Amino acid sequence: MKKIALLILFTLLCVSHVVYAQTIQENEQMIVSWFEDIKETQSDSAKIQLNKKIEQLLYTTLQEPNAFNYSFPALKYIGSVYAPDKLMRVFSWNYPLSNGKYGYSALFMFKSKPKSTPSLHLVSTTTAFKPEETRKYDPSTWYGALYYNVIAHKISRDKTEYLLLGISNYQPITKVKIIESIKISNRQLTFGTPLFKKDKKTLYRAVFEYKKEVNMLLEYESSKKRFVFDHLSPSDPIYKDVYHFYGPDFSYDSYQWKKKKLHYTPDIDVRNK
Image (tube, rainbow, N blue to C red; front, side, top):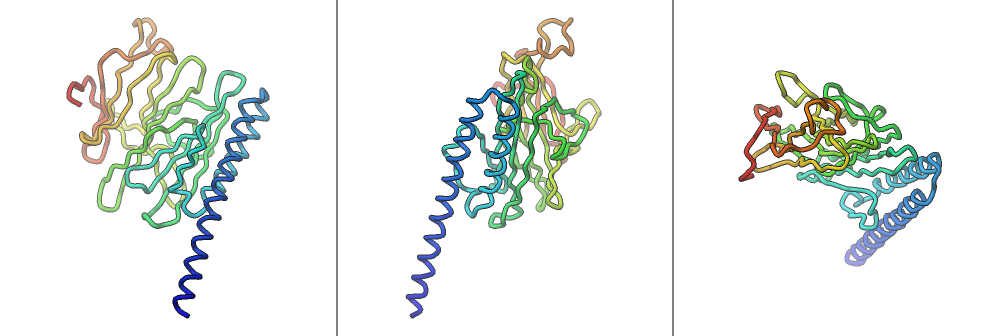
C-alpha cells in the first residue's frame, strides 16, 4: 500500500510539472505574438497597451514554480541575465515609439536563499531619460534601460552588493551606458546606492553618454574586482558636454573595489587584462 501511495504521489508531481511547463510555454508564445503585434502597429497608444499586456502576462508567468530557471527560448525580444550567485534574475526589453525614442520595461526576481520563492518587481516607462549620478530612483521614477550583466560582490558574510550594466537610447542622437547599484529592502526595490567615489564625491551610479553611432566598452573584470570602460571625450574641445560628439579616445578608466566602495581610477593599463 505504501508503494502504491508513493507511486501515486510521484505521478501527481510529474503531471503537475508538465502542466506548469505547458502553462509557461503557452504564455511565452502569447507574449511572442504580442511583440509581433507591436512591430506591425504604428500607433503609440496601441504599442503601450500591448506592452502592458506583455508585462502583466510575464509577471504572472514568473510566479509559476520553476519559472526562475526556465530559459524562455522563444522570447527573442526580451533579454534575461542572472547574478553569478543565482539569487537574482533580470528581464528587460524595449519597443520603438514614433518620436524616435523607446519605451522600456524590466522585471526583477530576487531570492533571499537558493530555495526561497523569488520576489517580483516590475518597472516600466514610456518617457526614458538619462539618470543623474547623484540621486536614488524607485520603481515609479525608473529611467529606462536594457540590462546586460549582473554583478554580485560579497561585502561581508551576510551582505552582497548587486550591480547592473545597462544601456539606453533615451534620445535619438546618443546612447547611455550605466553602472547601476540596486538595493532590495523590505521587498522594496531602490535604484542607486552610495557606492561610487569619484573626485572626492560620492555617487549613486556611473553614467556615460556618447554618440549613437559608436560603441563603448563597459565590462566587469571579476579577477581584478573592477569595472573597466572606455574613456569618452569630444571629437574637438569646443564640443565639451555636447555628448553626441563624444566617443572612445583609446584610453581606459575603471571603478575598483576598495574598502567596500568603488573608487574611480583614470587611465589604467589594460594590455594584460
